Length: 332
Image 1 (cartoon, rainbow, N blue to C red):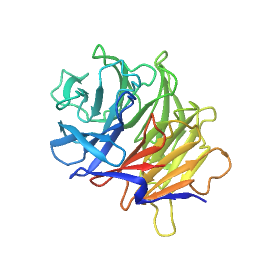
Image 2: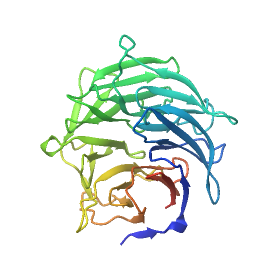
Image 3: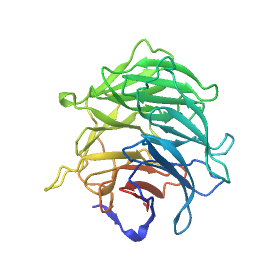
């Protein structure tokens, strides 16, 4: 039996434009903040910075962004020892410095293909939690690139898949191991110390593309991924490759309810949030795997399809989702 949240348990902000990407700030010396990116199918898009207060989500600032952001993420800096940075991906990886007053300003644009006037769009990126100087990106040109954002130089670039790469994730509690997923339907594991080889830890049925990849923040053995147009979240254990240890099913009697987003809990190794076209934000408890998981532990009716979600990294009480042009922060 799952618990259910109501509208009274959510804070909302209307961005006036369709939203996709979102990311929480890690810093604890300031009120909780979110950055959210618009999804407008034209050149001019924006990223808005919001602040969570006790009873509202309030606009702080914004900056223009070329093309929609495929991902937005703040530097994983809890103590505030680094500059207050937001990274975005789209046509390039960009870093923006957030100022207490005024709009954020672009600090740098990272491009590893300066010999050409064309660029291959970036599908996603991940900021290393242990070493904030490292950011890894995935691209439709089959490559992954690991950047040192302090020197603004690429540490390595490699052909990671046989076709487009759709997501990239560093392993929790480490700086060398990362994984990627792509249009070839595989999850591949890499180690920066030995890039001559990679390990395929999962291949989807019929080579269905895999769109999203999230590494468990508390247990580095667990990964979760989403196949294209699928109602399932696939949970993997890297110690037992090839077969999922759990499949979380969003289907109902009337719809397949394709999954669009997922986020591991920052405080628990056994809680995973997911959401999609079924208009429900769900939290699953996977503590009993490999036993079948029938029902989620928590659900929230969002009223429309959920495009993205992220658990607040420093306060597990809050889960943010994007629904059309609205950001909703749920008390979970």
